[in-house]
Image (cartoon, rainbow, N blue to C red; front, side, top):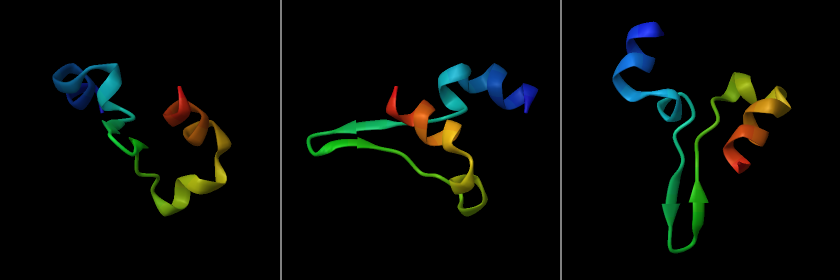
Length: 43
């Protein structure tokens, strides 16, 4: 994970794409039970 964050930075941990329709993000199936992940995507 450290190498991943060095390469992509903190924004790479929770990537979000801004589109004309709104913001898009992907939550892995196991993470859906953790509300903090969804909250981070909304920021």
